[in-house]
Amino acid sequence: MTTPLELQSLAVEIAREAGELAAHRRREGVNIAATKSALADIVTEADREVEELVRRRLHEARPGDGFLGEESGGADSETGLTWVVDPIDGTVNYAYGIPAYAVSIAAVQGSADPATWQALAGAVFNPAIDELFVAAHGEGARLVSSIEGERALRVAAEAPAAGALVGTGFGYDPATHAAALDQLATVMPIARDLRRIGAASLDLTAVAAGRLDAYYERGLHPWDMAAGSLIVAEAGGRFAWIPGHPSGRAMTIAATPALFPRLSEILSA
Ligand code: IPD
Ligand code: CA
Image 1 (cartoon, rainbow, N blue to C red):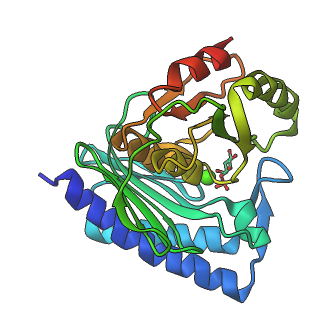
Image 2 (image 1 turned 90 degrees about the horizontal axis):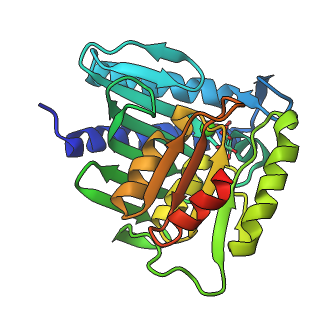
């Protein structure tokens, strides 16, 4: 039986290697390989190369495990464990040279469905500023940062009297933007200010690190939030992935325990 901490070690080792490759390619210059669902939804040659590396390394280490990646799709699991991978989360930041992108790798028990999986281990690595966020189920979450050093992750303690610092994101489909902006207007009364970081994995780890009080976004994919959801939970935060919206796009909410009920209530109105 492999422990969550052993899975975490493997995720970390591969996330670091993959992140170095992404940063190296970034320094060489980024080529946009294709646009996907919408004009803003781009894939670079590096996304594909990095995912290939992660997939190959995982297969070498644990050949029977399943895989779900943003760029190369899925493979069924023979072991009951599946790796859920975003090779470069924050691809638009990556393409523009904004240092907020990350490799996100998670091991989940069960199929790659956020409604039923149990996340066991996760690593989110931002190579541009050398920050690594990790968690293993039941073992807590940690930050290893060239800026902050190494520390246990803990969500912010208090509900801030002057309002919460709230992160959000907008899907790439322009048809969803008007509704997203209307919903944002309903959240602003409890917000001190708003952040749109541009990488869901980093929004989630920001909640875990107390850098944001809350984050929500509709329409995330499993690979955007598999590792981040565990990191939030292990840092004492609350995380929910709520399917069932008529649009078919689930709502993701991560927040401090103090803020979570109020934000959930606003977002479900
Ligand atoms: C996107 C980013 C973005 C979020 C989108 C995601 P990608 O992932 O996480 O912040 O708003 O919903 O799809 O395309 O950069 O890997
Ligand atoms: Ca992503």
